Amino acid sequence: MLGIPNLVDNVASNQSREIFWDKDVYNLELERIFARSWLFLGHESLLPKPGDFITTYMAEDKVILSHQQDGSFRAFINSCTHRGNQICHADSGNAKAFVCNYHGWVYGQDGSLVDVPLETRCYHGQLDKAKLGAKHVRVETYKGFIFGCGDADAPSLEEYLGEFRWYLDTIWEGAGGGLELLGPPMKSILACNWKVPAENFVGDGYHVGWTHAGALMQVGGELAGLAGNRADMPFEKLGFQFTTRHGHGFGVINNAAPAIHVKRDGWAKYLADTRAEVGRKFGPEREELYVGHWNCSIFPSCSFLYGTNTFKVWHPRGPHEIEVWTYTMVPRDADAETKSMIQREATRSFGTAGTLESDDGENMSSSTFVNRGTITRNGRISSSMGVGFEGPHPVFPGIVGSSFIGETSHRGFYRFWKEMLDAPDWKAVKANDDTWDSMFTNRNYWNDKVDAAE
Image (cartoon, rainbow, N blue to C red; front, side, top):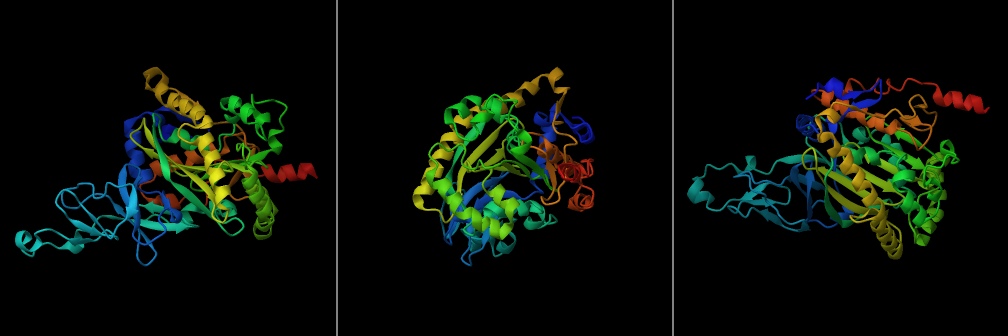
């Protein structure tokens, strides 16, 4: 394995191809990224009643997320503390307790060990059940979205989302009703490294007009003009890219939220009816974001397209494979017909066999497996588009790129990826809070643009 400093070059804006292939890199990711980051577990709408549960993953760790009787949520490792068997094999349900089918150990809704067969006769009163509950993970919720973290020293979820919450509130709260997820998720296996889809969703507007040219021409609408990457498109007037402290980012295409929906009347009307309230609450800049189309990733492995409203989790299965979980994201207070139509349109475009999903899947697999060759793997991959055409913005938090077609958000994603691999603990990460954006050297980019316009 190459040394960590060589995996990502923030100055030259490139990465080693080993990041998509090397098993040692992947094992270090499990230890220093997935075990220390806040990972998406579920949404309150997926388990609304006490006793409801879902089984999910934190990277390759199996997890049970359970709605407690007091209304809170708890998550614990889905493995019996006796001999390690998986406790629960159901995808979801409602349960008073979880019983291991190997030896019958019983765990409560909170993961505590509550009963052991033959405890008195065979353990002779020497079993301390209080110390043998399932291993818990930290659980925190933001606007209904539930995340888990395996590191007691990690910042809170709100701190981890940081300035990115300024953007998320625009849609996760919106006019007031917020969002929900429609499940159960579609699940599929894709032969690729987990970072390929994560970087694609973090803001890859470059591929849209080329990879999806045929689909865009078929769908029509606002994005049809992007097909073929037409040079006459005013790309710097169509949107922006954003990256923030902990690698979260997105690209937005202005006024294009329902653009990929063929049947869009209900969704378009909902946006028209609620945008004024979003503007009143959050201001005109965020009102414009509210009706834009977002390519978004929450570091490391949770992504969504707002507007199209597909919501993805990229569960890693080794360095060369992922399990993709796909939900539909809808306004909580929309009518049932609008929610159903959004779900059908999101499934048509980015479901397991969706029109645009199929385009992306082929590229993601190829971008991974081409690196199996030794000579190929000794090379670098570039993320230099738009270097210098980005910087701190007078309104938008983080670093803002000049166009939705660029790689500002890619550079931000891999900057933090490298930082997490470098850092021995969260204390070392926090030490960089004041200088995290120093690699973006054009500090006056946006001020100069304003001055030039005047």
